[in-house]
Length: 90
Image 1: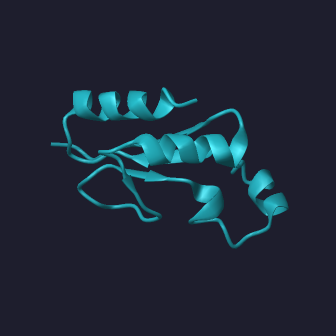
Image 2: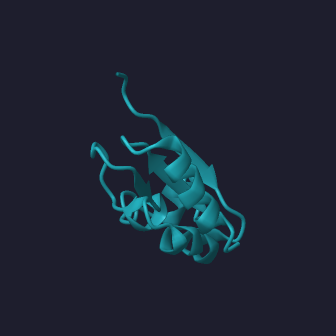
Image 3: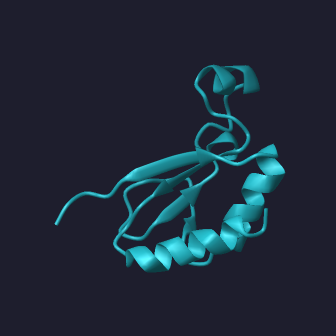
């Protein structure tokens, strides 16, 4: 009935900890694109913004711990459970 949302947050510990979250989620698809009907999980520093310098990323607020989730059509509880699984690895 309405469009999805994009949620961004940073995890402490930079890239290694961010990838722990990504790797341990099962429903959130790992991708560098937006606009799918399924929820996607992106690590911008190594995907969408991986080709720009670390300095330019920092200026834009894209740290190594940043994750971006584009919410799809799945049940909210399923997404919450999956993200909790990923975050539990920190």
